[in-house]
Length: 142
Ligand SMILES: O=C(CO)COP(=O)(O)O
Image 1 (cartoon, rainbow, N blue to C red):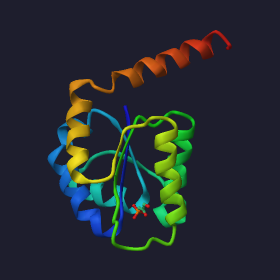
Image 2 (spheres, rainbow, N blue to C red; image 1 turned 90 degrees about the horizontal axis):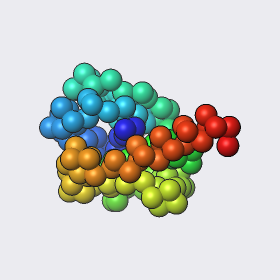
Image 3 (cartoon, helix red, strand yellow; image 1 turned 120 degrees about the vertical axis):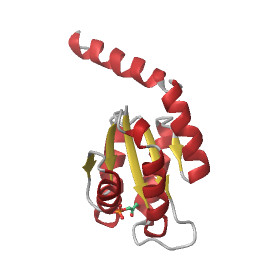
């Protein structure tokens, strides 16, 4: 599964803590992150992460593009609801795309814990079925 990890500055410590606590689950998956979040998590945990641009420089949009191609399977995005973000439209667009494609999205630690346990237990297997079907369709040239 492809998982996106994103956190606004005041939530960076939380996502590092989360990634440390759930490292054994996260390392089974393909991880993506916005620039600074990815750096912080890798430094703290050693997890291998594909890093996009920093959020304000287009990172949310890069993750959004993966969602629009239905490639991203889940998004963990610790938003800071108390600080204005210069790239708020990008943040809203990312969240909107998760809803368009029915991508599981956790915007805080409480939901993220439920999501990661669900992921570990196989609740997102429907995403694998979807990917397999798309591969079959591509092979058949549809
Ligand atoms: O701003 C962000 C998400 O909107 C996160 O970006 P960074 O991980 O680069 O700080």
